[in-house]
Length: 553
Image 1 (cartoon, helix red, strand yellow):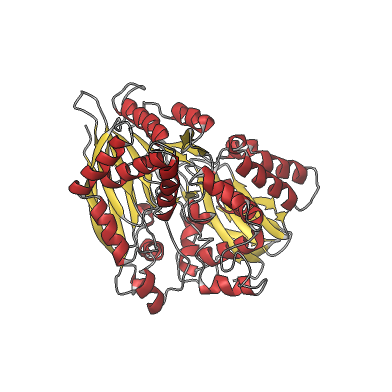
Image 2: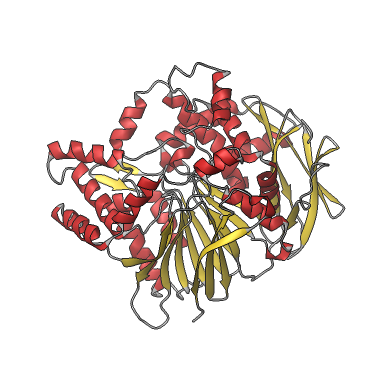
């Protein structure tokens, strides 16, 4: 591997005629992507002394597969000369095609040895990559959607702690947690440089959205949480470094060429490059990240795209929260209006990617709704303090803990499935992660002619298994008696009943896994798969944990 290519290539947004290839280099350079005897180039841009390029590959033929190479200043740096993996390739979408989408969340970057596998389980992404490498390319997914916790800034590996210790004392705050942009760059290197996963990221288009551990556990849980973090000396550099690095490593590649051209930071970078100017964009990105945190209504991390007859809507459920006790919503007014615009009929399927499950086990949903009401003063000021402690102690901060926002989005989903927003799709499916267990929930949408299904599909974790005691507790929360009790608590706190009713129909299960969704016209299937339990995942073997199907109407 060339020492000039530090990270990547990562294949990001791909449509019928274009693709985006992202890299990090060791210094200023011109990066070229070659495929089918053609070449596309981009100059690097600098951020705090690090160098990145996003090569826009244009003019491709729809429905074609092209192997590609990467050059830095006319020297081939990818693929590695000693790799036994298939060539990296760009597969453009075929107009009107069905969609094959892999998805999951929560992946810790750890060694793939017996010790780590015993403690944290087999890396399902790596097992999936080995399986891809041994399978026919026409069976590979069109896209992988990472639904949060791509990196863990607050629960670091030994390798990450060694890097931190080389810069500062681990005895000083924030200790083994990340402090700034420089430490984030190393965290991404640890997450994305394993040879097998690196190949997967180079050949499988990806979309991403953050969750709390990308920044910090419980990020934006409540107004009290924000007030406490504002008093912490290292927090400004952490949140700025986290959001600035997220924009570079994850968000930029989510956007289509048209959307990227409108982005306030990217448009400035391109304009200066076209003018032949060059500068380090660190201060600009720092200011942008600080503003995006303090004024979330000034920038949106959500995005949407249509693939054939399927619409994919990916929702930021972390950064755009409204947190005042008298006015709480998991997404703010602007994000809610944007989502409302995206929730239209005329598709076979509408997929909503949100890191946090929209439909939880009933017992947990009721408990979270109750905790929000109590922490907001429903049972008086004294118990509000206790409610805040409970909320923070056991991570009660999903959609259910933002009841008004939950109700609004539930009504959108039900209206869409019922055909009140145009021709009803066959399914309105929430794709989520976060909770370190996986399951399928199905909502009761009535039996009207032409109505679609409302489904929650959770795939979590990719690699970060729950301890057995925590898994047992999660199982108990879904049981009928506890659900009835927490429902009673919620009613006593004057929480309105949800406008939607649902049940978990498959699961839960707690293994590391990756899910694959496939559409077949108005039919759809989902499959959850795990790597070999003994840790010997190099043979590419995958076990099917469960399957779910929706027949076409």
